[in-house]
Length: 247
Image (cartoon, one colour):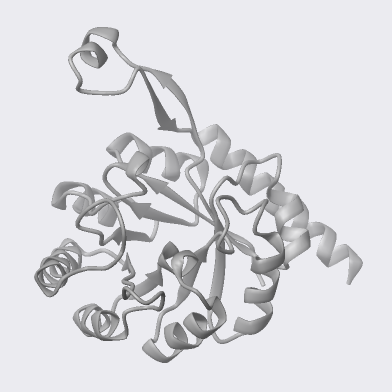
């Protein structure tokens, strides 16, 4: 299986860095410091034209993933906007209050996104039984699941990630994400057998202090780095070469 790298971005510059760095897929968001919210229609259109497959995060607010039917209606409209913009796919998830995936909400959103690629996001890290959640995602027709193995970072979730990957088999792609860097990517790939990865590939960027002082940004923001993307891709290429040599 070819190893792939998806990069999450929340700016036009981030999209451009993904193209320059050679990302395999882009996840378009707003407000990455909040875990990613639905991006603007303008950013969706830019992503659709960039030449790299781009998926839009569909998440109307920060916080938990227990959405009301009114919020689900908003998400359906955002999916329609992503379709109109020409995006390859969407990323969404929903949970019920009892610690399981919200099957009804996911069915509604899956129907709304018919014909598009679909990723189930890290809502799966909030449920009680991730293996049962994998089975539901398969039944609903998701392409892949983004997960940290239920841990704050992939490094802490490696055992769970390996178990999820084994349970999924070839039914659905398990994509590891949260805290991946060029320095730890190889370790995670080897220990989990996962070959699909998600990262921000970002570096610190000091903000204009006047703008930060007025509350329009944090004192230090983060910026997608084409160099970091290339470094991550180099790790994956070396991993593939080692596997080919071993075989």
